[in-house]
Amino acid sequence: MYRPARGTLTSRLQNPYVVFFAVVSGVIILAVVVALLIHFLAFDKKSYFCHSSFQILNVNYTDQLNSPATQQYRALSGRIESVITTTFKESDLRNQFIRVHVVKLRQSGSGVIADTVMKFEFPRNNNGASMKSRIESVLRRVLDKFGNLEINLPNEITTITDQDAIHLFTQECGARPDLMTLSEERVIGGTKAEEGDWPWQVSLRLDNHHHCGGILIGNKWILTAAHCFRSNSNPSRWKVTFGASTTFPKKTERVNTILIHNNYNSGTHENDIAVMELSRPITFDKDIHMVCLPEATQNISPGSTAYVTGWGSQINGGNTVVDLHQGRVYIISNDVCNAPISYDGVVLPGMLCAGLPQGGVDACRGDSGGPLVQQDSRRLWFLVGIVSWGYQCGLPDKPGVYTRVTAYRKWITQQTGI
Ligand code: 4AZ
Image (cartoon, rainbow, N blue to C red; front, side, top):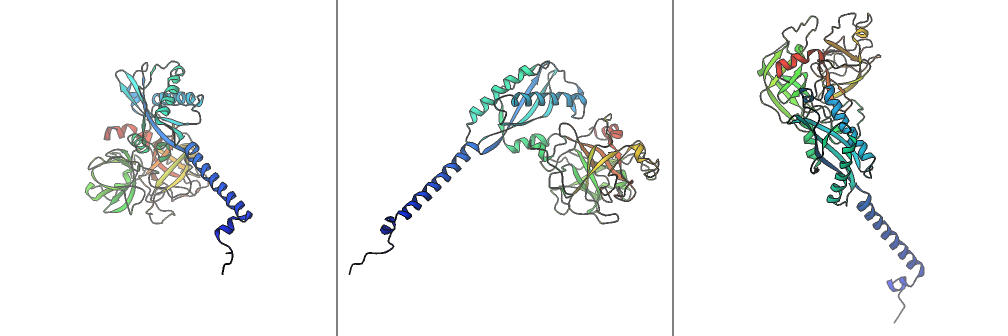
């Protein structure tokens, strides 16, 4: 017997409510798909790094341009960065241009070549050739703005991978991860460091136990404190590990030579400085590379911010730790540090104090030989101190005392050639 079926597809399609809901859902799904497509094709941005070299014709290359620590190097590279930035910010690529950094100034004949890395953000679907030609046409405008600098533009700009950009930075000194990716400066918070945050920090191990911190200043040279070798200075018993964890180091190297300052005085802590030569040069990568050294004349301003890092104990009399930690402190003038309530005159000119007035953040046992660093105006990191001594750890009016690196700049060159 025939009975009209209830609820079959045909019958549902005859129901006007069902049809209405089907059409509305179809339209919504279609709209979402189209919106996602438009978003990914037109608005989703991808970072592009470009490497280009500008030839500066009317500046004579001098030894002063050999090191990023000199006034001349800072002035010239700062000028190039600011002219390129202004030109892009005034062009129709103002939203695509992110940042430029002069990675290196080098000699070309009697003139100078500035190697730069630039970062742009373009929509994902952009055409590479048109992107390059738009960048090149803006760069041509840079020429007018250099004023008294005579510049030859690069023949062509080359796009490079993120890894290539990082590689260019790791061959030079003082770059942390935020600079290598030309990103916003990262706020350094907490106390535990991430891998690669302080790529020049090393652990000096005596008979396989962490004994002191050390600082990578060249591909085979470690700077540290002389007092680290009071118990033992035989290179064959020492090892250097790289990376933020001492339980899982990224690399381990043996030591060839240990050179301790001839006039180190363990009573007064004077000349608390030493260098170690590694048994073979190490290859720099994004997590392992050197810090910049300041010029002997560099002024270290009282009140300026500095960071101290190490695997030292977290409390006075505590044990060392296995993950690298960092602390933010302020530079204190030798006069303030020598006040009667502080160190009452025993802080000598070759020493530098840093801490917080209320105490709390400080280097401690096991941090010795490690770095105290500051960032310059171009976001490069410079070594200003080597953890040396102090009365206990983190007490008010008893800041950490560091070997003042500027005072030993010549000694470092004599020992290492750096
Ligand atoms: C130490 O024993 C040590 N608070 C290092 C630094 C400081 C104190 C002690 C500074 O190696």
